[in-house]
Length: 635
Ligand code: WTA
Image (tube, rainbow, N blue to C red; front, side, top):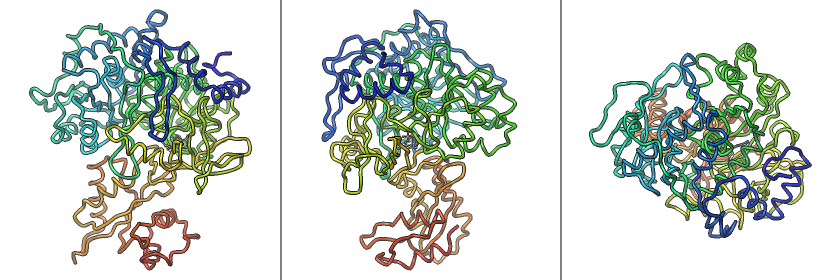
């Protein structure tokens, strides 16, 4: 039996038991048989969650791009590696073969070197979903530079914060991007950000929309001429298994974004392994994940996991609504997509539109459907199952996080029976547990608690860039010797997991993690605002939307509330990005606080969600009277 490719439920249980009983032997066998190492490891695993310190395949040497590209060339050089589908359906798709990818990555890697980028340097990538994005990620990995991809929907302030935190030397961007019928001036956003980024030495600019942009002499360079002049051969830098591969920022409930650091060997093994099993990818299949490479889903399951398996991975530049709501299904038909991986928020939005947008297309190529990013509600699950999967394609509801690097809990299609809203069973090697309010592990089934993981897995983040203490406090301090996920979950009578949602102040809006604190900071910057509190409330399409309670300064001035709302959202757009805009803003004279001055978000959440039946005892608050005022004026 191969541990690498699980095909039946019985096999899953056998493999799972093995992975828990002998984790080191288990991962060693997988690593040995399915990857290219330049030097073998001395030790499979060394770990101590109290520090925390986690090392996989220590002593081993490799380059991840040799695993994702070079080793496929002999047998699959002419196979499509990346299938690029442009924003505009009338523009031709690009089939980038493994041979071409090899050459393009090498050229790009040589350009990076020529511009002074060396092993260990940080490179910020701020690009739309065009081939250059995947290629620049791989080019960094080729030479051992650490990529930090910033989602191109973030504002200049958010971009600058991330560039400065990682002290990046270079930004790779484009003149602009297409988004449906709109174009976005990416280079302008970069220029604004770079006003306050002293570490940046150069900017590479890909041409995409052919707009007239500013090029700063000495700093900014058009990418294409440099690529044209570069050699198509570039030796891969041989890295240690534990050398950082990339930094990816994720929101915390407080403070600035956390730069999660992923390392090379373990990340490669785990993303490849989970890709193979969760999507049951077979040779010749066309796989499509609709995420953006700016998020972890794109890193692990558009770029590294699929390419490490020699797969064909689709990259889509556009949006599900352009030219109309049938775009996803038109692409599935056009490229005969076999595995389709998207987010519940997209499914809910699509499900609201007439079925005629689906019905015209031939979706018979689909074999596996996936979701990720937030809990999927039952209605959306059924819509997906019936209208897209025609009840034949299993749905994999995959639970994982930026921090976990790869999929942690998910059905294995054709093996694990699925139930709507359940992520079902842990992947081999993953040991989840539920914790109660007394920090005790809850044993047995039919129970609910806080989700932790009690044993390391190869792709877990190793630290937060520049702040190991914060890494320890955020993930390893709530429960001794366990990684705390920040999520709540229930385990049913058969041992299946269902993720119930965040138990901290992170709110997931349309699949994007947003911390409340940075949004509150942005709101508080408005000169009329004294204080604010942001909570989430349920939203039909976005899953959650944001509700802001805002106390205005007493200036005696009578300000127009609608204008204030617009100004506040404008500030949020500038500081973070449009994804963090507030759906509702209620002005109030106070916020409910404990006697120690802590805002009682639980009460605010309930009021915003129209669920005031059980607010609990509010009499012990510092200011119980504001609760009534807030309820009376709820939007
Ligand atoms: C949530 C995305 C329920 C969860 C890969 C987690 C989910 C956070 C699921 C991480 C799922 C992700 N069911 N909730 N299938 N997948 N989540 O870092 O709250 O963007 O902690 O990683 O999304 O989001 P992130």
